[in-house]
Length: 347
Image (cartoon, rainbow, N blue to C red; front, side, top):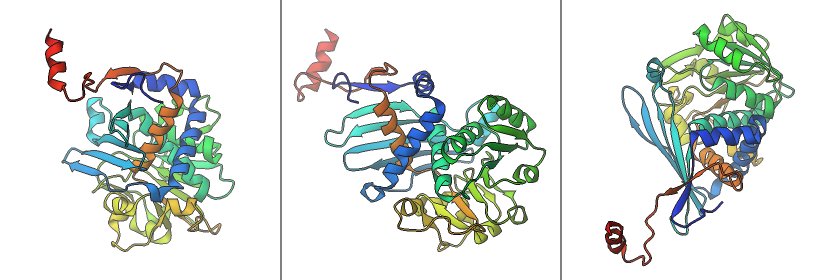
């Protein structure tokens, strides 16, 4: 999609994003996002890659996540403040931008709080398609906050999950998630403990909020043959898994220089072996190789996933009217006469 005028930039608000999701359908959009992410991972080597630029504080983190494929540039601004929920605020908020590399002009500005939840879930489902046990039908969802419903629906839409066993330290969070997933077609079970939630699950998703070196899963809780989708350890000083689980697992990551700082593997030696997901998707590295293997997706999110999500949204907007045209760029009649444009505005 191109702006309707070269000086106007389409902006997708939170309200418009929600309307777009419902217009497409949650399941269909999750699958569409996964397709775009997979396509971009398969051309991984074309992209600029750098760990996200982070400003850390005791309360949380503010980050910029940039990348480019040589034709389009994209970035996301995102925060992570676990304490926010105590004040009725979101733990994570975000917005993102796409720009034409040839001119440097933005072509899309979008909210990304809702979109990040969708793309994070789509990535989880996509990775499970490659790494989860064949025919997996049951997922344990450990941590039932803002991400849990998105994760559950993505695993249903992309990986074929039929049953979700949910647990959170806060029973109210589980009640909320169970209520929100009613009518989804999933069999949703509220559990009294993490151990109960994991019983019989082929996929285990951990997604807790506290910024701490936590042990949500201890080594003895994880048996052979499961796929662990670890999405909650996503910044320095925040983990969810006991180190013993990592040593028994084949660990898959998005971008090692970032994951070694922010993911579960921050607990391990710098040379701890990992496999990059793009290599699995292009057939350059194996994924799941046996029924007894423990596969672990150490997910922290990477800029290319956000680029893919923005690219997907940009491609869906035409004809929908689900955006505002922003007067974001100065557009003087003579590009050399910016001051004259200012003077004429006074008149």
